[in-house]
Structures are given as structure tokens and as C-alpha cells.
Amino acid sequence: MALFPSQEWILSPTISSLALPPRNAIDRLRQQGWRGVQLDVRAEGTRPGDLGESGRRDLRSSLRRSNQELTGLDFWIPMQAWTSSETVQRALDATVSSIDLAADLGRCPVSMVLPGDEVDSGVLDAICSHAMSRGVRLADHRVEAVMSGPSHGIGIDPVALLSSGVDPAGVVNAASEQLVSVRLGDLDEAGQRVPPGIDGTGRLDLTAYKVALTLRSWTSGVVVDLRQWPDPAAGMQQAREAWAAADASAGAC
Image 1 (cartoon, rainbow, N blue to C red):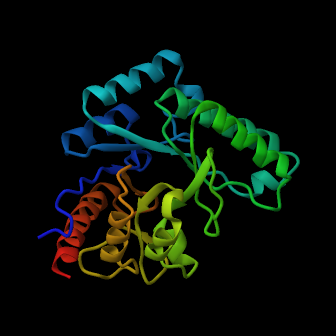
Image 2 (image 1 turned 90 degrees about the horizontal axis):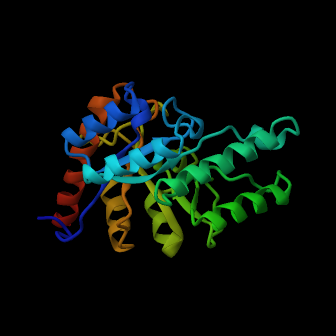
């Protein structure tokens, strides 16, 4: 029996790893019963420049008709883009474009690694001000992220936390109302990104992680992070099975 039978989870795969055009990937997820979708603003077909006003409107309508939820946008750029005077303006412009896309697609959150203390504070202020003006929240995926405000909060990536020796369930428990986006993925003993498994070979305590999210009444979707998985299509099915098994395990505790 599940620990909290009334809890309804929206699992949301990252479609950019499926090696399909975005619309085809979204259709396949719908056919397979996935209720959520996570887009990547740096992938072909879902970049801000690839989606004009009509394209954005059509994408929103398509998701609504298929009863799928856009849980957010991924915007991953290397931290050095913020620290070089030659690239910081391009990084800022790309961030602003990503926020605008998120706003046009229903004000979904943007997952990114916010620039830290090594970057001029004016850059972070500009990012947060624009996000707040567009009604978009940023999920900061820095391991040490502790800030929260109207424009930003904490993003949870178990893989990044595990690789830094941090317990994901503990971060969820400590984050309280600051959570903006949470992800599902695991790290094997070799340090490679893998799906959470039902055989317990990964490092993530999936039951503890799921219980922590449940106790925080998290209802905004769980991003199934397919990045760098050996077989993303098979892996996301494994992840779904593992997630359901963790629910059953929690109920047996």
C-alpha cells in the first residue's frame, strides 16, 4: 500500500535526450502516458529563436489538448560564460530570452545555475528583476543554493547533490517553501548519470527522497532527467517503475 495514496505525481521527462523532433517526442510521451514535459531552451526546435509567437501559442495549445503539463524549461550554460567579459552579455541576453519564452509558455519555471559571488552582482540583479517582471520563477541548481525570493528558489538535482556528497532528501527537508523544481536521476558507483533503479545499484535513497517530497506536499511535477543516460527511452520507463516501487516501499515502512 502506498504511503500517501492521495498523492498524484506528474513525472516529466526531458525530451531533448530522446533524439526526436520536439513535437514527435511530446506525442510519444503522450502515447506512453506521461503527463509532464520538460523542454530545453538550448535544443534545436525549442530554442527561443525557433519558436515565434504563433509557435509558442501552438505549443501551449497542443499540450493543453493532450492534457500534458509543461513543468519547466532547462537552461544549462557553463559557469565560465558568466565570468568572461567577452561572453557575459551573451549569457545575460540568452537568459532573458529563456525567461521570456517561459513566460509565453505559461510562466513555467526555468531551471539553471545562477551566477554566484564571482560575478558582478548587477548581473544577478538584472536576471532576477526580469524574471520577476515576467512572473517567472528561476530554479537555482547550484549545490549551495540557499537564496529564495519572488523571482527564484531552489532546484533539486539529486545527481549534482550526490556527486558533492550531499543527501538530496536532506536538502528537500531543509528547503521548506523555497523549492521551485525537483528532478529524478541517480549516480552509479562509477560517477555516471543513470536512471534510479529498482535493484538498488544507484546511490540515491529513492524512498527517502520521495517521502521528503511528499511531506513537503510537492505537486509541481518531478523532472525525469534523461541527460547522459545510456538508453534514455528505456531508462525513463525504468525510472517510472522505480518511482512507483519507492511509493510502495514507503507504505511498507
